Length: 411
Image (cartoon, one colour):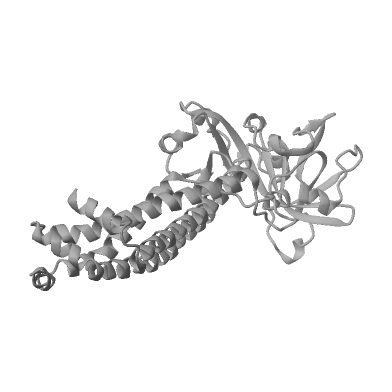
C-alpha cells in the first residue's frame, strides 16, 4: 500500500509543479491516444467482419456438405441429416457453371438448382428486389437472377414472353475433333420470376432454379452436388457438424459458414494480428516517455527517497514506488483511451460521420463495432508495457550506490 500511495503523491504533487509533473501528464496523454487509436482501428475490423458475416449469411448455409471424391452424389441423405436434433431443414443443391444467352448477349454464371426445402431457409427470399422466389408459373420453368446478370443480359423481369437460353457443358461427351460443336452443350429455356441483390460477387454470378431443372440440364437425375443445412441453434454449430460427420461418414466434407469462407476470414484475422503488432510497437515507443519520466523523477525526488530510507523503507519498496507509478500511468491511459475509443466508435456507428466515398459500395459509412474483448487485451498490453518501462528506473533509484549517496545527503 505504501508504494502505491507514494507513487500517487509523486505524480499528483501540487506543491511543486515542475516539468516532471507535466511530462507525466504527457505520458498519460500519448498512451491514451495510442490506446484509443488501437481500439478504433480494431473496431473497424470488427465492423467489417460482422458486415461480411451478415452479407454471407444471406447466401451461405449454416452448414454445407460435399462429397470428397465426387462432384455429384446420390440424393439420399436428407432424412438421415434431418433426423439430427439441431437440424431444422436440409436442402439438396445442384450447382455448376452455365452460359446464359439473351438475344446477342451472353453471360457465364453459376446455376444453383435448389429443392423446395431451400425456400423454407429464408435466405435469398429476403433479398429480392423484383418478383417472387418461385420456379414454376403456368407449368413453365422459371429462375431467380442476380441483379448484375439482369443488367448484363438486359432482362425485363415483367415480361411474359422473354426466354433466357441456358447452356451447360455435356460432361458425358468426350472432346474429340469430330465431336466439336456437335451435342457438346445441353440447352434449356427458362423465364425470369424474380431478381435478387446481395453483393456484387453474388449478383453478377448466380441464378437460382429448381433442382429438377438443374438435374435435367446437367444430365444428373437424382444427383446433387451438396447439401445445405439450416440449424435451430447456430451456437451449437460445432457440435452439430460433428454429429453430421458421424452420421454420414468420412467420405463427405462438412463445412460451417465460417469454413466456407475460410480464406477471407483468415485474411481478416491476419490483418487484426498485424494491427496488434503495429500498435503494440507504437505503444512500446510511447512508453519511452515513461522510462525517461521515471528516470528524471528518480533524480528530482532524491530528498524524498532519502527521507523514505530514513523512516525505514526497504529497497524493494522504493523500487515498487516507481513500478506503481508506471502502472498508475498505464491504468489512467487505459481508462482515458478506452473512453475516447468507445465514444468515437459509438458516434461513428450511430451517425456514420466518416463515409465510404465509393458509388459501388453497399455501405454508406465505415462499419464499426466496439468489442470488449479487444479492450481487455489492449488494456493488458498497456499495463504490461507501462510496468516494464518502469522497472529499470525503479532498480536505479533503489540501488546500493544510490542508497549510499542518499545516506550522505541526509547526513
